[in-house]
Image (tube, rainbow over all chains, first blue to last red; front, top):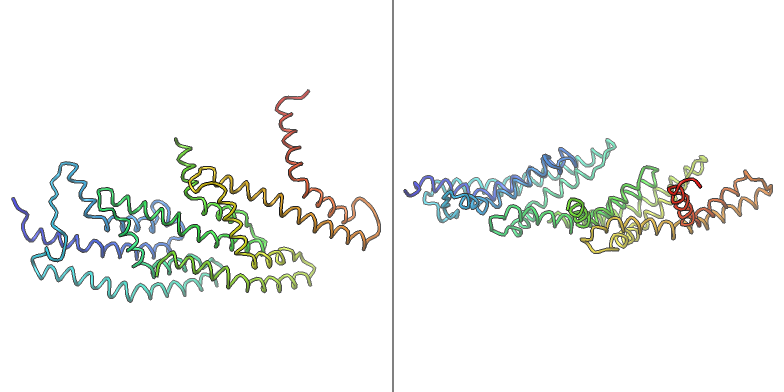
Length: 223
Length: 150
């Protein structure tokens, strides 16, 4: 029995809205990075959770392909705007994605990032590190580029979600952390000058430059 | 706008713009601490650190690059290289500074007694030059200790 047109249109709309949902997930990840602090990066933390959902939404179609291997017939619609028959249904998708991209991403998110910059100054005035607020502001301002980066990791296979997460890990370990190691060195120098513990920051800098090696070390330990 | 460019530019700004400015702050703090008779050495060493951020970053990168990027021993080797550098480069410099301090104290305070400050400076200088030897000595004691009392 063929899928009723209304259902096919609803599925098409939901598949078309998946990248928009990924954008919203990234925004929530950026907010959680500031709200929960470094704990949000760990398992169960808000940042990690929303990044995972971002990857899932971005790779929804290949991920649903797993159902075929379970023996469940999933003849998905094409998931393109042209494949939605009802113009009214098509309008829903266009309106929602337009609202998210034009209003939320282009207007609200930069304002939110600017708020985090103010928050960074308030953090410093309270004697806390302003780094987390600045990082959250940077993350929010670079959501478009992050989404493009995640799309470039999408292999389109059944393993696409894992491929995106692997790619993000490689990007973090190979590009972001080596750059951030210099910040750890700056922190070590500052702590030394104001007579605070500093050696752990030197170890952190070395660790940031050796993430892949530490990963291999852990693998060798459990082998 | 990308996140990695943001981190890179933040690092460059902190290291090349803010830290040289902080060096001046630490000079002022060092002078104020000195005027009150407090220890000002951390502030004054901090000045050098603030002006050497790029050099120290390159040094840490060199320590971490002793093995391939996916070698499990990379982190350990980087710590070993850091300790080697500290023991064989920084401590001999520190020893030289203490020899000079000891000589100055000896010149100012002419009395010779074993509790005088000059002796502490010369002993510190000697210990700085003997880090590897002291370690070998402790290892020798431990090795003999495991063999039992003879």
